[in-house]
Image (cartoon, rainbow, N blue to C red; front, side):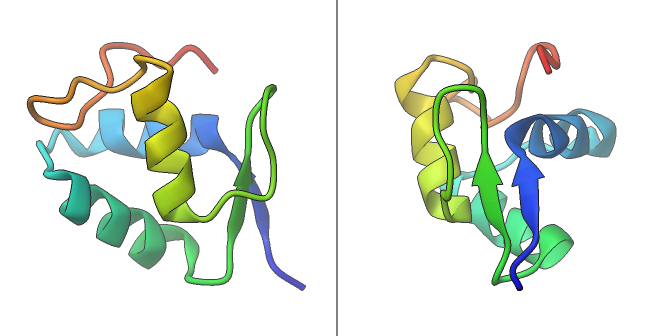
Length: 75
């Protein structure tokens, strides 16, 4: 059974890393950290892949699109 992780854990990972990302490197890091079969959810969406989660964050203005980081963790 696939793990189901809240998107807030991805935000925490990014904030804790102190890294900057490209979209591709962020998706790769999420997959490496949480596993390829993991699905993600938020209050507004569920059963997202890592790529879909990043798209969700982009669409909702949650990510800084210059360096693919988060300002805060509004978990």
